[in-house]
Length: 457
Image (cartoon, rainbow, N blue to C red; front, side, top):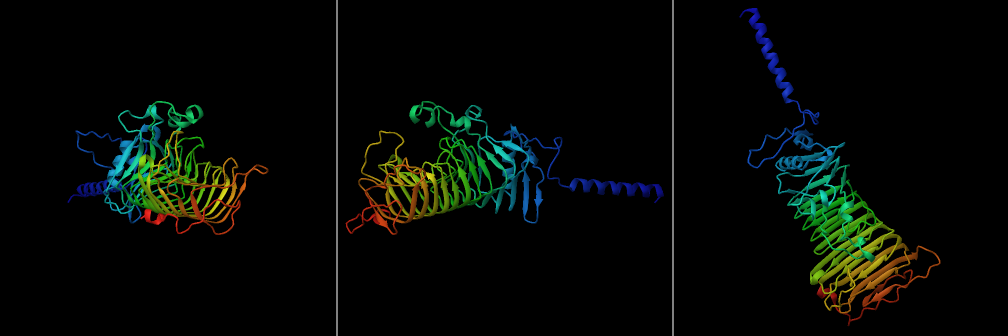
């Protein structure tokens, strides 16, 4: 072969190898010119998805920027997140990455399973946010929820990023309680979205996130099993209505640990159908405390059991540890333990309220949710003297039974003020160790006391 042909052949081979090498490289980020901008059209076949990054030997990373997300806090990035989700949901081990340094605006969206992924990670290192208030919400989209995760098994939502609920314009709707005279509401639309909702899902972990200013509840778990929530920071103003930090309903095997919550409603609320719930090391307040309920609304049946709240602080809150039920309901609250809880200037530190009512015209009814086997141990600190330190307002027709108090010491936050005595109504139980202030109003249980364990079965 002539020498010039050999040179030409070698140049051709080198050029091909160089081209293949360049094409095979993967870049985790792209410049503005390199980003994909994918538009989904139902009538067209889907575009080829971007190549996924490989994170170590076991996880494939799907960066939302690679699917067309802009992250400027204004552009609608919903489609990019959905495309990234659809790809990650089909891979055995995947990370959906919301990268640091970007703010992503998402419309109300359902991330649906089931997925093929074992251990899907939704990694939020940047900021995600909804449209700014009801006027920015699309008219044809429900205003009751923002981000929904449906039928997901084995997902972890984590990261050092922020979920900004942008709730202020929702709180100022005329229908909200603080907008009317003396807490009354005014006519007008009132739907407000839950920020993040998990529905019919299992083996979930939510860890390390910051979330603020939810329009309504910040997190809600409905019909879920196996939930671990850890190291969250949840913040909203004390006057923001219905901004519960974490709400669970018909959910079991729940662990909520090591979190800081301050808001305008319950730090944690436990609804009907929940059991095997462990809450530990929560700093709560300002807020409405940690609540079981409200239960039994509209004569509904509600059962809650095997609940533990321990090693926590509740501060500057309207309530401390509370059980609240509506008249006319049925079902049972049983096997609840409150232990090692410190109160700081809390109004109603310990309260059972079986006359819960949002108006003044709730009529007396004979049916009630049964309350049995509730334990209060090592509850200490200070209380706001506007309300009694302990209140057990049980149903006229069905008493609370097997209440147990030990090492309860609650002193007035303001010295020199007149202090109301603990209040009891149709409440039976035992003081195992003398309390401060003394509780003389609990009635002693006898053989004639109604056996509420039968009603809880």
